[in-house]
Image 1: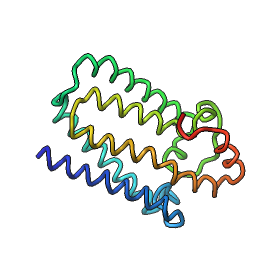
Image 2 (image 1 turned 30 degrees about the vertical axis):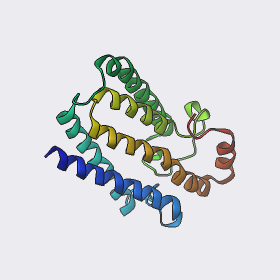
Image 3 (image 1 turned 90 degrees about the horizontal axis):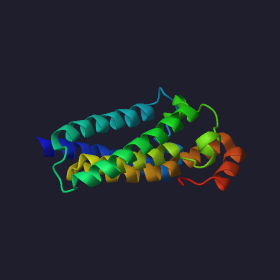
Length: 182
């Protein structure tokens, strides 16, 4: 059963990766960011995302601490990374707003944490996931989480095309002066 859940979740991750890559290479037919909340693109992306998160939770319960990472490293490095990542993600969401976070246009934001990085939520997610890899200590989840990090690293490329279309010169100037991640 564990392997079935892992392979279903791996498939979900690969589908999301494929949808993001599709959005980068075919921006006029993009899936991410979605054209509207009512669109099939919005629904398919977020359904897949939440299915993946649910399956991650199931695997966490089944596979917690069954791999090779020593406890001291797990606790002293993993937990601080989880907390730092969660703070950055939360701060980014509070600054950007929920609509923008869900890939829907709700105004251009370049203040607070967005002055330093164009993608604080992805940066925070990556830090959080690295902490989870250490803390959970599961080979299967490490594979899934590394794939998730890859998705979060490439997602901004799909978003930047859309942001340039929506906000034009204002976004281009911001993009030129602010780093993608750090």
